[in-house]
Image 1 (cartoon, rainbow, N blue to C red):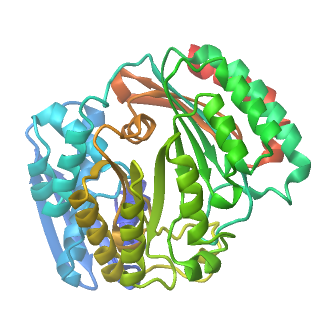
Image 2 (image 1 turned 180 degrees about the vertical axis):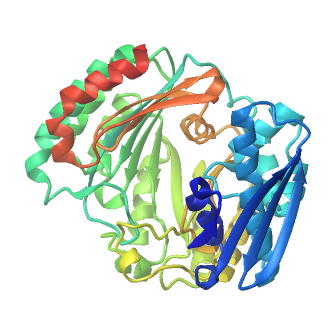
Length: 457
């Protein structure tokens, strides 16, 4: 723990501490003092004192003052630990999920963001350049309009549970007794929620593995969505190749789906087996060949999977590029609570994973892919990031809207979070549904009532 006199910031300061391997074992004391327009933060680490002062010309208002106090307190803890441990992290003092969103905010206030990232927040030049490249690719997609709406549907069933997964999903065999009731409830919520859509930007069916459903049940959901689909980008997470068939691909095409995800995670069979995925790399290739002429395809890869070497990951990246899908998303393994891996591993070494992520970026950009969205999570190996790469003109609108939080999102299903944005995302109201299926089913009418309040307030 950290001893701080800004007790309301204790958890956020601990987020900074947790960026550093072994820092949780240090004795850290943080003290804050305001001297006219100077914010002074003193960080004492195992008896060694590090003091930092920051001048602020104008606090503006109380909300802005609290924001700056938080920023410089976190920055001071980062700088103290960085100096004490002689470690510089690629994202510096940034702990948030959406560094691109912060970059946009800085551009709006100061006209540019790079100096703030590198000089103030101590973000590396490489990561700052990555953000710059993403913002460039998002031109023509990034659009602030409070009437813009994305539509999300969640199907929480999978053929089996992967060991790194922490999503609220269930093995469809063990959850079979709930499947019919869930599909009916989901259709009810979709039809109820359609009235909240203003300017539809995209539709996304996620999971879980939506194609784990039998064709008749999947088609019921697709028919409900037909009523709102006016030809926008429509993505379905087909995900697991062991559940992709000619039949369900034809079904998706019939109902206007334009994009699907076929997610190998790795092209190494030994890792697939270790992670609990009941398919081979050959299955991925076969299902991709079946789908590639009908859909824009995204493939997910994960850097840092248990037991994988750099050469293993390199092989997966090279294989994905050889297949040439429109999108390749490179995730850094994140060991979350709720996953099987969290019971056996706590934190992965960052050096090897950094080498993997760097190789992916260099090789994908050389092959003509552009980075177009990025997000970060807690407990990521190497404190790195997840990046989506796409061929020119093939970026996913839904991914941009969700990561930059510039678009309202009407979300249906268990664990779905609806969002309404105001003033281009300056204020966001949220309404979350229960995470587990039985509770969702029991509270459907209350969920609909709360959604009505969210979108019509």
